[in-house]
Length: 394
Image (cartoon, rainbow, N blue to C red; front, side):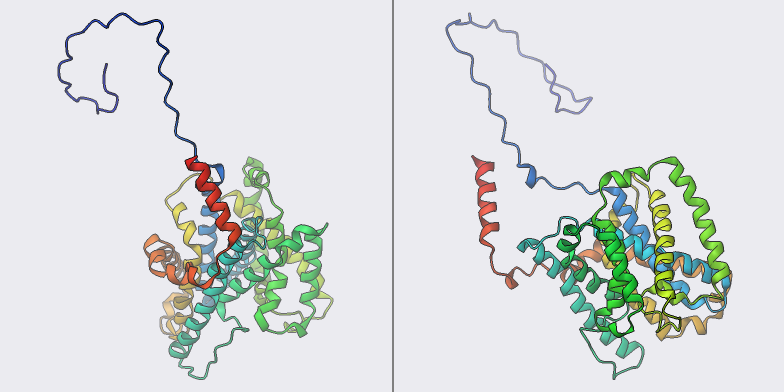
């Protein structure tokens, strides 16, 4: 009998001569079969990451970085402004929708609260401090003050994610969550008294996309695989770029930031509901089109989807530094079509590098600290672990 564990081409030693077996004792009972090792409990099996969502997160974060690199070009190029407005209409809504989808199981269980603190609250605190010192040095602004209530630049997303997840049980409880979230966003758009604390305008105006993500199911994403959805996405994006090209000189792109009320944008109050619903509809269509074209299979960038928060927070230093140091004013050729292409490629390459595993290992202490020393031990969790260990060895 051949040894199946040997590689092909392996020379086997000659077999020993065949020996006759002694007569079988029919009274002997067959040896009991060896028991198979117990299977690991279903709850303890490592979860398989869906490449679709990792691909979507990576592509969305690349668009975020490219959008930041286009901002200095929008004053002198109508085409750059059209692309900028189109990308800003859907890249953060897509990212927020996916964040909501992966927050569906969030509750007030201690282990999930710990992950919320270590994975969101602590990075917010550390990067607020880091960005404060960076601005003081790079922008030559030694008087810039640190403030936990005033997120600077990219850190607004962390505080928004913290608030959204803490309110998840509410959105899973009420009967009409999406209409209610849209009503909250509309009221926020006409409420200038909300102020800048915790960037609540953005928290409330982007809220509908997080709530939609909470209530999506895997079959909803399966429907995006249909050929007609992908085909319809092409004219939708072409139309969006054409409208953005027309609206560029006529519209304030700050509408897409969702960080100001209509009064702060110099618009009459009645435009709040109109623009909120119009931008929501536009963003929803483009998010569907974007997700329809995201690859479902494993690609070379799938593994980078696990490090998108690293790329998001770290690329902000270069994005802001390029303004502080006047690169776009010093190198005027960057404002040419070739320069815009070069800037886009550099932005995509930089954020891709910042999502790689070596960068994740280097900054994991800031992004995903364990901090076991900071929490009391949960008796219920310890009991679950003991019961799981007992079931595995029993």
